[in-house]
Amino acid sequence: MLDISFAELCIVLLVGIIFISPKNFPTLFKAMARMYKKAKNSLLDIRDEIEREDKFQELKKIENEFKILKNETKKNIKKIKKIKKI
Image 1: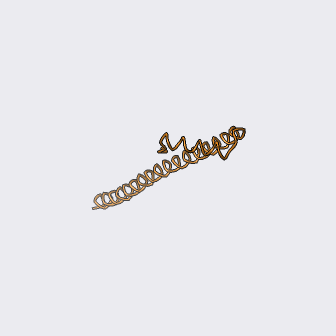
Image 2 (image 1 turned 90 degrees about the vertical axis):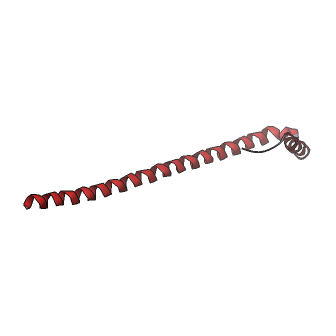
Image 3 (image 1 turned 180 degrees about the vertical axis):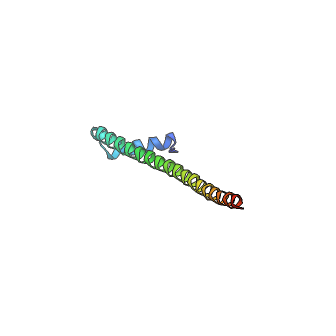
């Protein structure tokens, strides 16, 4: 998902050690974990919404097919009634 090489990770850690004191690391890691969890949950919600929308569109398509069949059936019934009257 994230394309970070080992060297890049080492540089980020080195910069973190320089600018953020080690005593603040636990707080920083907790905040990062919370942000990661929120981002992950948001992405999962988006994926679920897309899946629901796909299913909804499929159901709409099926509903339209049934409407077409219903109309064709009504037309056929009318034709049959006309034939019986003759």
